[in-house]
Length: 398
Image (cartoon, rainbow, N blue to C red; front, side):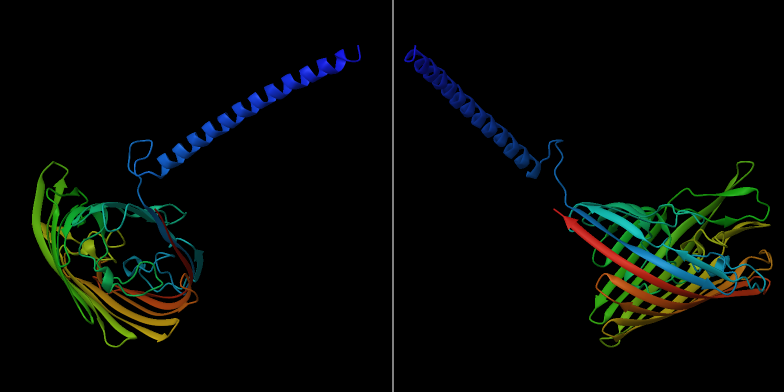
């Protein structure tokens, strides 16, 4: 018996060993198979074609977190933006303090900026009483073609002056609308949503349009700056309660640019004039006296003439400090038939200092002033003090 038991135990151990080796071989084979599957999946994800069949696209996120502290000594209309056309009449002395982050922005780009790409960007000005998204840009661009929603082709972004006020100069060309454009280094041709803004004292008609606004611009860069000229031809119209329609044409022009006088001093300017131009002005487009493209007089619809402009300077006082000044004005034609409370003139001014603490973080202080004259001569004004903290970010993934 003593010799049989060891033999049995040895046979059992040998069987277990053989089974263990076989199990280990199978386990290693399974691990290798799983690793091959993971490697194949990773290669598929990293390849130009994704599992859905769509090519992978570079993605960029950008935006800023901006906090403003604003103090008004008089009623300025809007608490977060300085829009002179919204300043109420009379000599009001209603002090107001506001702390908000509505100028914070978030956007992303899908695709390389040099190739076909889509851009979406929004801020938080969607509502006056709460934080809601407002679309700033949503467009597709491929080479010279651009289509979607965003700033009008008349806008000159390179001549936009520095202000902490998120709205900017009253006379700046600022309208956002849907359009399609063909743009090269010098020329741009655009068709944009007409979006007429008409005033009818009898309130018996609504604005209509039957063709897009036609815009052409020319831009020329030179060593010390640039110049941009633009022209817009519109057809503004109204539809009356009985179904009748009436249309009239309106044409206006814009000239803007920037000039570097020294390495640290830069001048920026814009001037514009024409019929039906109110829709494009920063101070009038959708705010306050926005219905100033045309007026339904006793003898029918006629376009209104308006003109505006601003002059600005930016001085790099020290390596991290920038000082800026802006002065702007918008004037609408005077007519005894226009409502007495309608806007005749608005003025806008700012003095700004910005400290660039880091490439991403900045602090600023600004004193601003808005003025509104009515057609009957009544004048209202509003001074403002504003402090700002802004953190900017930008990230790209490929």
